[in-house]
Amino acid sequence: MEKYLQKKLIIPDDNQTPFFLKKGEFDFNFIISELKKKDDKTFVAKCIGDELLNTDDDYFTSIIFNEVKNKDLNILLNTVYEKLRNGGYLIINTNQISLHKIELAGMMMYYGFETFFDNYLKNEKYIIVQKKYEKSKIEQPALSFLIKLDRVGRDGKNLKIHKFRSMYRYSEFLHQGMLESSGLSSIGKVKSDPRITPLGKFMRKYWIDELPQIFDLMTFKIKLVGIRAMSYAFFEKYPQRYKEKYFKVKPGLIGPIFDEKTAGFNEIVNIEEQYLDNYLKNPIKTDLKIFFKTIFMIFKGSRSS
Image (cartoon, rainbow, N blue to C red):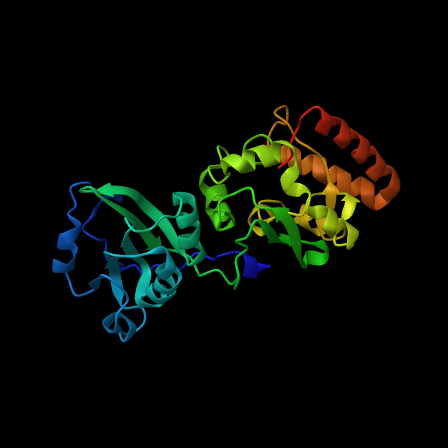
C-alpha cells in the first residue's frame, strides 16, 4: 500500500534557507538574476547541460532554469530530483510553458516537488517548488480522457478503477497534500477543490465520469452495491478497525451517499462502518436496502465523494 503514497523526505537540519525567503515567507523584493551570485550550491542554466548531469547527486540547494518548454519538463524534473538536496528549491521560468497551473503543480508533485510559489516576479512568470517528497512510484500516470486510477481493493490489493477524467491531468498527485492542508467538507470531499475542470463539473453533476465503472462491474472487479473504492491518500484517514472490515468486502459501484446534512468525516466513517458490519452479517438484505436508498438520493440530485 505504501507504494501508492509519497513519503515525506527527511530534510537535513543544516539545510540552507535561500535568501529569497524571510521567516518562511517569500520576499517579493527578491531579484532572481542575483541568485547565481550568492554561492556555489546554486545552479543556473537555460536548459539541462553537461555541468548539471555530471555533478554528484544531492549537491545543489537551489536550481534555476530560465527557459523551459512543455516537452522538456519530464526530463528536467527527473534529472533535477537527483541533483537537488532534500529540502532544496527548484525555480523555473514558465513563460514558455502552456500547462494549466493545476496540471503543472500536479506534475511537480509527481516528481516530489511541492509548489511553494506560483506568480510573477518582475514581469516574468515563475514557479518555485521545494523537494519535500519521494518521487511517485507509479511509472505511468493516467493522462488520457479515459483513465485507470489506483484504488484500495479487497484484501488491501490494488484495484484499477476506470473513469472519465473530470480533473486536470496529474491532479491525483495533489490529493495527498490537499487532504493534509485543506481538510474535508461535510460530504467527504476536499474543500473548494480547484482540480475539477469546467467540463468535469458538468460530468460529475450527471455522473457521466462514473460510466466506465460499468466495465469494472461486468468484469467482477467491483460489485453493484458497496463502499466506493478509495484512493490510498483518503483511505489513510480512516481508523484501523474500519480498514480491517473494508478489506473483507469487495468495493461497490453504488454506495452510501452523503449530502450537506452529513455532520462530517466521523459520521461518514460511522455510516460506512455500519454498512460493513451489516453486510458481513446479512449481505443481500444490506445491499438491497442501500441500493434503493442511494437510488432515491441520486434522483434528488445528491452526489457522493
